[in-house]
Image (cartoon, rainbow, N blue to C red; front, side, top):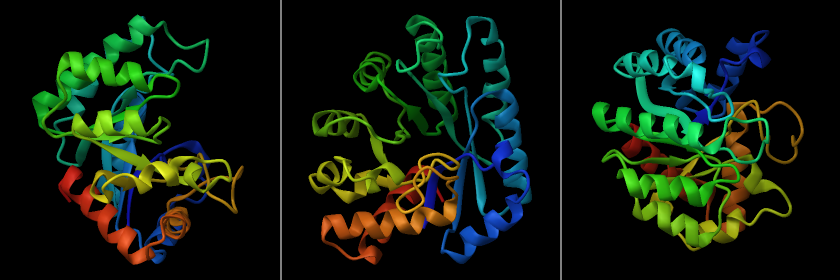
Length: 253
C-alpha cells in the first residue's frame, strides 16, 4: 500500500517514530509521502526521506500557515523542490474554514507560486481545500494545472467537484474520514474510476474507525482500504491494486 499523504515528521511522533514506521512496514505500507507545511517541515521531510527508505517527501506551505511576510520562504521551498527525495509540491492550497487564516488573496498568491514550482520541476501538486474546493479548482483552471497532475488531498467536495478536478489531472485523496458513519465519500468514489483515487492517512490526523479521535498513523491505511472496499463491494486487494497503481504513476514510484 502507498500512503499518499502523512505528517509523521510532526512532534506527535517524536517519541516513537521508528516503531511507527516499522508498524507501517509490517502492515504492508511500501511508501509514505511525507508532506511539508512550511520551509522547516519541508526540510524535515527530506531528512526523513534520506534516513527512511519507506519515505518520500513533498515540500510546500500549508494554507493555514501562510502569511504575507513569509512569502520569502517560498524561495527555499522552490530550492528544496529540486532535491531527488522530493516527489511532489505541497501541501498547498486554500483553507477558508478558519477565520484566523491569511486573507484569501494571500493564500491564493502562495498557491499560484506552488503551481509555478510544480510546472518548473515537473512534479505533482498536493492540494488542501477545506471550505475552498471550488475556488482551488478555479485557480487551477485559471493558472493551468501542472502537467504532472496532483491530488485533492482529503477530498471534501461532491461528485461534481470530483469530476471537475479529475478533468484537471488531479487524483482524489481518500483517507480515514471515508470510514466515518456520515461520510459521503464511499458514494462518490463508487461513481469514479478507481485509477483516479489514491489512499492516504494524513497522520496524525483523521484516524479511521475504530481509532477515530486518536492519533493516526500509516499502518491504519489498511483499515481505510478494508472499510472502503467493503463499502464499494470489491475486495481489499482490488482496491489496493488500483489505488497503488494511481499513486505509483502520480509520484513516479
